[in-house]
Length: 206
Image (cartoon, one colour):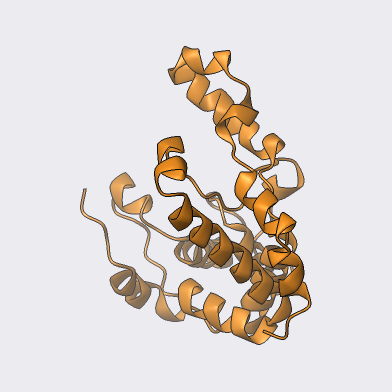
């Protein structure tokens, strides 16, 4: 399947000239902003929702009643479904054979969360770059979502893993022989707390 480049789609979506995907294969490559533009253009024309799409949390604020009056949010999964916003995943063998590299990665992750929460302007610039937008309302909404989602001491959340655990278990029944906690490793965060790394971040002027 050929991936449709974001820049080529952006040209079609500019100025509200949203183009519907020609195939299902093309549809699955569309990002939140693309889907929102298509949905908004159709809703504006018809005066109602003419088809449904899923929007990432950072798009829902820009789809609010005030800024997108023709779009109605039918279901906000964030209010009912617990899931991890981000996970660091690796093989257990790697955490043993190259513990130092894994720890550096976890440290960088924790530092990134700290910067997100304490340096809003930097965070907004990063969001603007990767969301490919300068829409202040969208960026503000995105920032608030991520600021609340990412916890300063990011221990693994068992409840958030449960849906994934159950899905994989349907394909591999042997997974039922293990508890969800068996697939988590909190030792790196425990170590960073124990050594004062996280506490020192809070008292720094980074």
